[in-house]
Image (cartoon, rainbow, N blue to C red):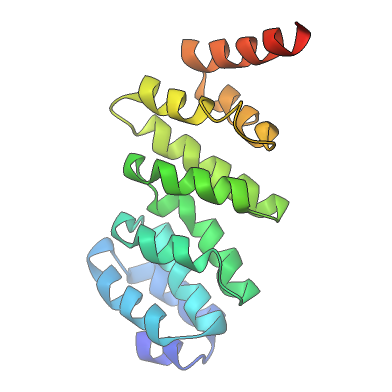
Length: 167
């Protein structure tokens, strides 16, 4: 089936079939197929990796977020939440700040929330994110994430930001 997909044949139907029986253990083959494929076939492989939470393939997926192929790029952004872990927070923040498309920004924000919530040290991870508030002109992208994270650190960062603005 992966060979069939790599040839770009019946990509939508093949992806649905593969999703019904591909497990996390099969992801190395899916990733290999993605590397050899283009367009809709590559995008389908990326979506499968994301759905099956293939965190080992975060570097590949994040790189595809800058693909020239819009179909592949969209699939990569959609897959981020499934492949992200706390170790990827720096890369996710970078993607958040360079994303041009509103849907892509939302996908990265969701991935950041997941990564932070999965962190053993959420306070440090939130501090890492909020530390950028005074260093970027895209503050709203960070502020939009904070209610999903909750906690004292997120609240304090927002309060500090508003107190600084009113002075």
